[in-house]
Amino acid sequence: TEIYTLSLHDALPIYLGEAWSDDVNVEFGHNGCNTRDDILRRDLADLQVRPGTCFAQSGVLHDPYTGTTIDFVRGPDTSSAVQIDHVVSLSDAWYKGARQWDDQRRRDFANDPRNLLAVGGQVNFDKAFRDVSSWLPPNAAFRCAFVARVVDVKTDYQLWTSANEKDAMRRVLRDC
Image (cartoon, rainbow, N blue to C red; front, side, top):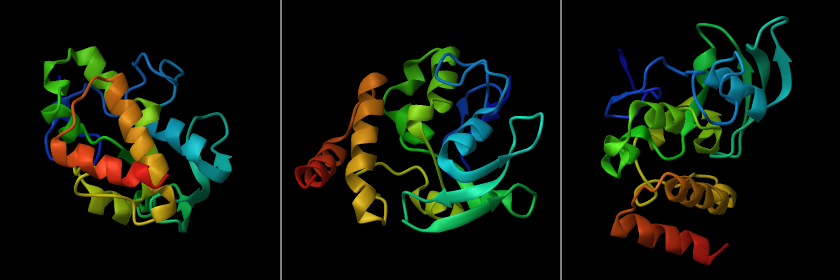
């Protein structure tokens, strides 16, 4: 048993088992590939996959959070330019209901593609563990889709929202 946050900036570790586990009962689970590569393969354009593997070797990210384009090249000095964000952060989920879940549900949540997006490293750092009441994507054109995704994930996983978060969601969704 090990503890992982699966995101550099989720402040509260949650028992999740193996980082980027394939042992999950959500989309892409049990496909022989780790979740990070599943999301990179889903979200990168001009994707090149290392032959005979699941590894996204290179591609182009059209970052939904910033609206910028980021070239991705797998490697120790370059891979962090594109990170996988938990739209509903692990720590937010923990405080809003996940602490009551069993280990499998936590692993499923942490690896659920509906809650994961490939984004730029800096914007992932900036978002950290915050919820909608304290962070929205700088790319205003993506805010409606972002908040809708948060609502879907929190609804599906029966996570609660604070009054401040609900007000922030309403303000965004009112203009969609």
